[in-house]
Amino acid sequence: MGRLRYLENSDLAPEYQDIPRMKSNITKAVAHSPKLARLVAGRGMYLRHDSGLDARLRELAILQVGYSTGSAYEWAHHVDVALQFGVSEDDIRAIALETAGERSHLEPLAVAVLAAARSLTDDLVLPQALFDPLSAALSNEHLVDLLVAIGEYNGLVRVMAAIEIDLEPEYETYLERFPLRAFAPVA
Image (cartoon, rainbow, N blue to C red; front, side):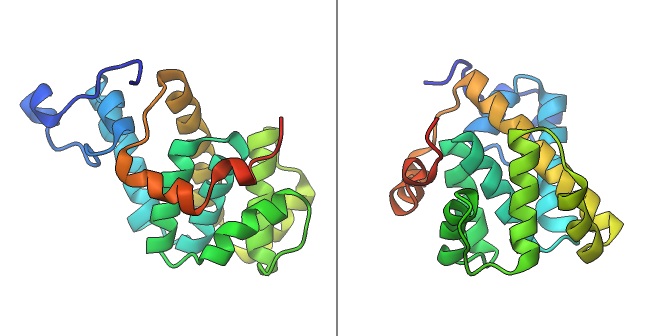
C-alpha cells in the first residue's frame, strides 16, 4: 500500500473531478494536490497526444528512464504505452543491450535518444557529443519536447519512489513479459 491514500474522483471537489488519468495510482496519489495533479496529467497528455515528437522515440526515452532508475511502475506502464504507439518488443529489449554498451538493431537516432536519457538520468548532464546528434536530427521544438519528457519522467519516478506507489495488477503482466530486474543494471 502506498504511503498516501489513492483518491477517487468522488473524493475531489467538483471542479477537480475532470483530472485526466484518475485510474492510475500515481494520479490518484498526486490528486491530494488537485491543481498540481491536473498540471502533471496535462503535461503527460501533451507529450503523448499533442507533441510532434516521434512517439517511438518519446517512449524509448521514457522506458530508458524507467529502466535506469529501476522503477517497476514507470517501466510497466510505459511498456504498455510503448506497445500501443508502435514500439516493438525487440526495441524494448534493445534498451538492456544499449545500456550494457552492446550494439542492438536500433537506428542511430534511437541509440542517441537512449544515450541522452541515460546521461540525464544517471549523471544529470547532456554532454555536447550526445546533444549534437539529437540537435541535428530533431527540430528545436521536438528536441525540447524530448528533453522535457526525460526530465518529467525522471521527476515522476522519484515521486513514485517517495510515495511508494503500488503497481496496478493489470500491469504486472508487462513485468512478466519484460522483467525489469533481468534488464536493470546491478547496483
